[in-house]
Image 1 (tube, rainbow, N blue to C red):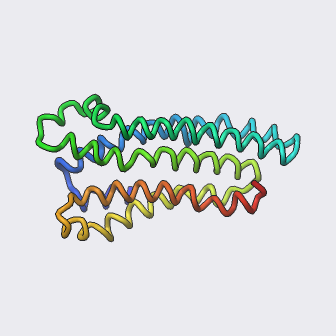
Image 2: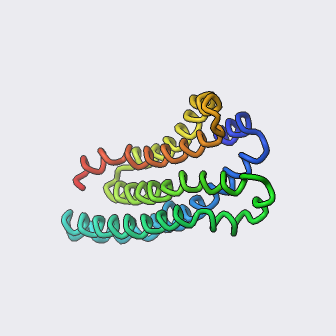
Length: 195
């Protein structure tokens, strides 16, 4: 709610806002598939069962799933980056009528596509930590996405304006960095729990 309020305050309605919303729609829809709901529902019960066989078996399965996610989602991200202009034409076909709107949307999508990989790996980390009965870190990790995606636009809006760059890029970088921090905040706890 706060992120949307900051977004509306800084950017209002218009070309840039439309471009951001369309660009974020692609990785955000895929996030539901590869990250939060589907992965947790499938991963946690299987990993919990494997944990009964011992830590080594648990970590082997967790490593295999991590590698599969890294390769699969990484490939999707690379394809998304390469084909961003075409994806934008499909999901926002009317943007071609407004000068540079399609190009802006494609640029924003390219910046935000890696967010999908970060949140998929963060969901994997959450699942692993939940099987270890560690709930605090996974529960606060998503807050970093919200905090950073609010802070970066607020702190860098004028920087982008002074450089003659559309300040909506600050929001895209905020999403990207927030997604990365959502993953990184869990890494020390993963190692502390024996991964």
